[in-house]
Length: 205
Image (cartoon, rainbow, N blue to C red; front, side, top):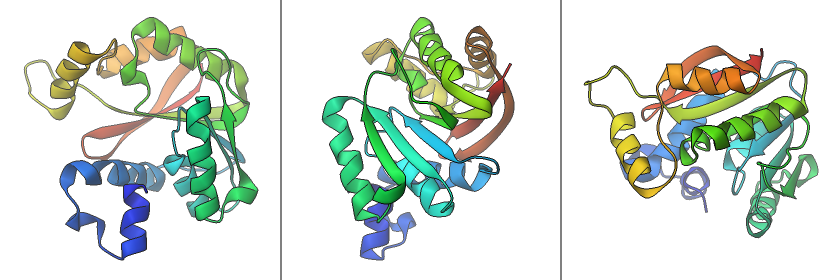
């Protein structure tokens, strides 16, 4: 059960839950509140796990058709979550590898995906999305953003952890923009979505 659905099913307000467990739900809600889905019909949640992000977006906009792209052992959980929410008729889950191929869409969601990977791997993921996006389509990247040098923040602390445990890293806006430019995207909007995370909206360059 996801934190968002847990709060909904139990009737408990989200702010009664522990902060660290609360963050994913608040970030999703913040991103959905800020994101316009005007002129969007199809949405792909890239590496979307159980589909919480795209399913919540579909709940907010009944006109959307959503899809999760993730590894074979993950997608059954996304299908089960869609069925539980009554969204199976507008939802599908595709087993695949986002380094190799992504389904076509009007909007791609990449929530806390890029920080897991190095620059070359991030560029490969973003290029796959850019190659498949419908004309006039967009991507939404949700990540922490490192601020001014020497000014401590959650993103800097997370960056230290990512560098220690994975090949990934947190990035500042200049570093993100370099990734976007290298993959055929351009950042068009930036806005906070809660818990130290930001939404970075991309359009074709």
